[in-house]
Image 1 (cartoon, rainbow, N blue to C red):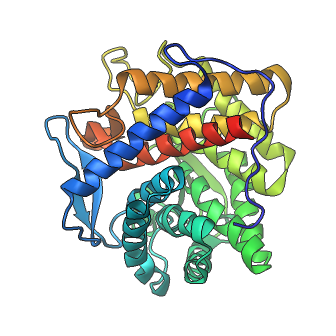
Image 2 (image 1 turned 180 degrees about the vertical axis):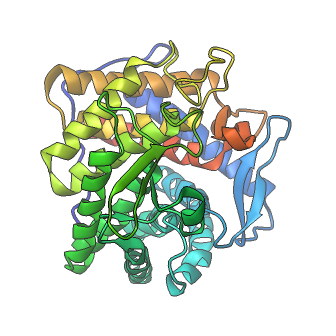
Image 3 (image 1 turned 135 degrees about the vertical axis):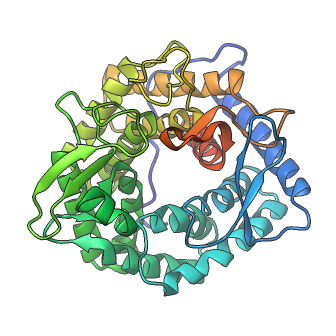
Length: 395
């Protein structure tokens, strides 16, 4: 991948309880992930690439599968996991499976834009595939998807429309914090194609989101609603959080991850500052084990469900962010990320019970969906975080 992220080694080496060093911990945890992935592939035989692993209920022991379609947003995570597992092991069985689960998603490049999640789907699958194989066909798909994504851009507002299907319900152009992750496809497309338009749109989206999506303390709304004709900001609200003024854990995780990634591509100090501000309030309000409740403001805490997926997203983001921040602050971010991964390893493993890496994630709590489940995107960001930690320690 052009201008690939270069890990910056923090000066402070922080050990883990129960292992000799952070590097040995990451190796051990990655080996666990590889074993779980191999187990899942065995259970999925014969492989049907049109069926995508999504979740595992608390009383179930195998992945629940969803047919590949434009109705889902999670189909890129499983091939992404397979690519990451191949990266760690070099085992061709993981590469072959990754290719199969990736290439069935290519039909999306020929469809009109229907949802912002195209970035999630394609960059986690085709993006990782291209990074590891340099397959030119993968590059073509990513660039085509970038063209689809920018179809959702409203220049009056300055952001990508997240959910075209929800415009009437929200009463305007809606942009959700999750959309920050999809900007990676656009930034990458500009570098890969030499066309600055993709990055220009990504920056406008990030700038508008930074202006209207955050409260003064750095916490974020899940949804920002704008007047589609005038571009005026109408209100901040939630869709998956506890309340409009609450801090939904995974939404805040997307903010931390998204602005860290934006800094990687642009080196714009405002994005690094926003990532730090969003991270600081998140870290300040975490429970002792550093795995958040699904929403920081749920009045049922400590009886509220946790969200291991948010912890995995933030751990991955903080490892990267630690390399962009000097001194004690960078070391503190890295230490927090390592402790999050240690906590997930100690108390949130699927283990023998199921082939998922992690359990105890929360999908859509207000809808009563995927509460205390193993969910595929938790596993994706967990293995990504472990690989980032491994690469950081080896640099």
